[in-house]
Image 1: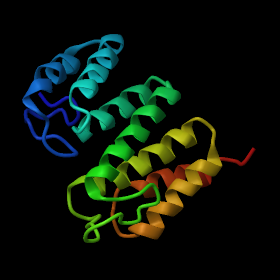
Image 2: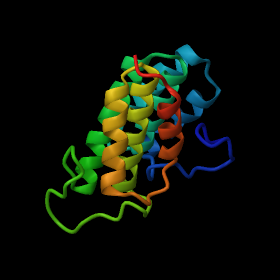
Image 3: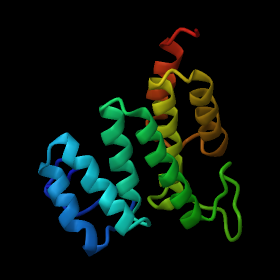
Image 4: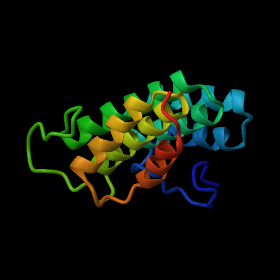
Length: 161
């Protein structure tokens, strides 16, 4: 059973997962919340290039309202995906050809981590950061269809304090 999709599959969002962490992911899928975090962080330490681990960690911690840990995981995922896609922190190409943000791979995952960071900022009450992240996504890949419109709608519905 895939921890992230609920489907019997070894396909993971963000690309392949090294065999060295498959067992940890299977354990995390059936573990309680306290153990799940430890298993996922252990897997991340073993395979920092496995992008799906950052998604899982950010989601796990955000669901538990552990926003600092969720942000840390998503920010690390953003850096790792950026490295793999040849992007800097603003989505500019560092070298090589421009990435396709609509195709599965590190560039799309980079955008998805931007969305995750926007959602985490929104949940944590940092509306300005949430807006900045969403504006960056819109500027770089306005048609990427990441689900960022949901975060945008939530942001619009949140009163400024």
